[in-house]
Length: 38
Image (cartoon, rainbow, N blue to C red; front, top):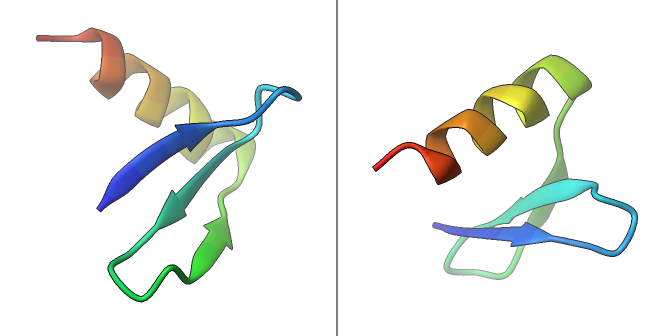
């Protein structure tokens, strides 16, 4: 799974079939925390 951040700071998840799903703000914030936490 790839994590993408668009210009609007809206993060979407794209799986291997390139299906994009928008996630709610609370999930978005969690994704940001995971992406910056090594």
